[in-house]
Image (cartoon, rainbow, N blue to C red; front, side, top):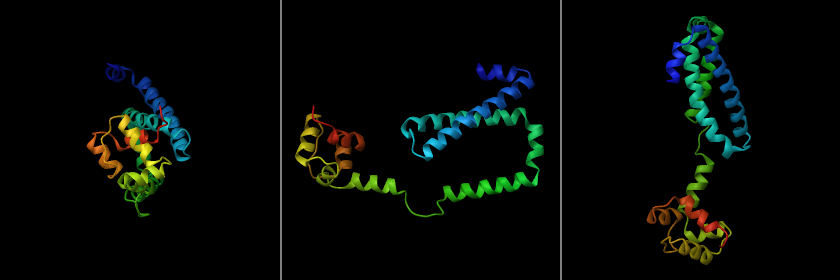
Length: 171
């Protein structure tokens, strides 16, 4: 319904709407991207950034649709082509990880989840016997020998949920 109404509006109104939405979403996505880069309010901003990013793509498509005539002139200029080339190269470097190496955060998480239960308990600052009792209290089956991943798979739970149960304060 909303999309149908937009397509039926006068072309000048549609241009204003498409440009306004693109500009406003650009500001919010740019701001949330900066917050995420500096790890500020990251847990609250990430989902907003992702969802509005999808809306931003839709707004860009509307903007291109309603402004194609004038946009075509920009696309043929040498400065645009050089800018596009710079963006494509930068994107390729990040996407194909030319810097090399695994993501260190992922490496740490994978190592912790695969480590023996007792070592993870110590790492979390929890006595292994207390950790076992906490899991028992929540009905989590464990041998006390396997990894967090093993415990999670056996109990059809997330490994992060198991860690949270181990680390939580006694009730």
